[in-house]
Image 1 (cartoon, helix red, strand yellow):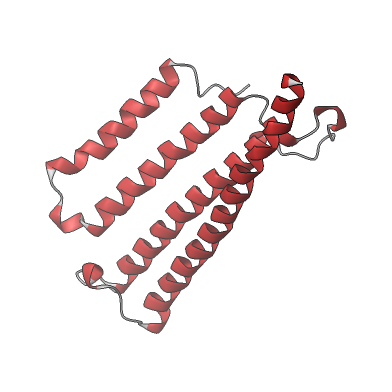
Image 2 (image 1 turned 135 degrees about the horizontal axis):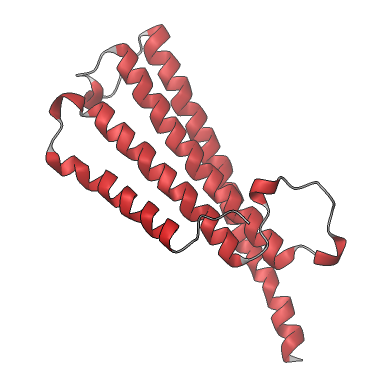
Length: 167
């Protein structure tokens, strides 16, 4: 009876799957809107936000594109997470389809899912640093080196733990 209850409890993970997938769709739409804003600023000379007025139109468009890249990456993290949770907790392993899942998104265990998410989070942090440098290029300070140092330490920790090895 307890084992059957635990097996049925796995369906609670649909909450995480649906929530993550909905968040992913929303972030893809937000990323598309930021891309649209980049075209608007560069091609149609629409007014940029006040914090970007010190940049020229091309740099403002690049800033929007980097922000959209960041948004798309977070959307992909949510998508990978929802697919991984589905694969681990819901999908019937005996009805495994052959060759229908891309190799980079396959999730054989929870550790593999954590590895993929950690790698993408490091990339997101790198894009955030790129955005920070671009927006504040004329006002760079030593304090801005904290983020790349953190990225380096996270990457080194990931490598030392062997979490970035592709299996």
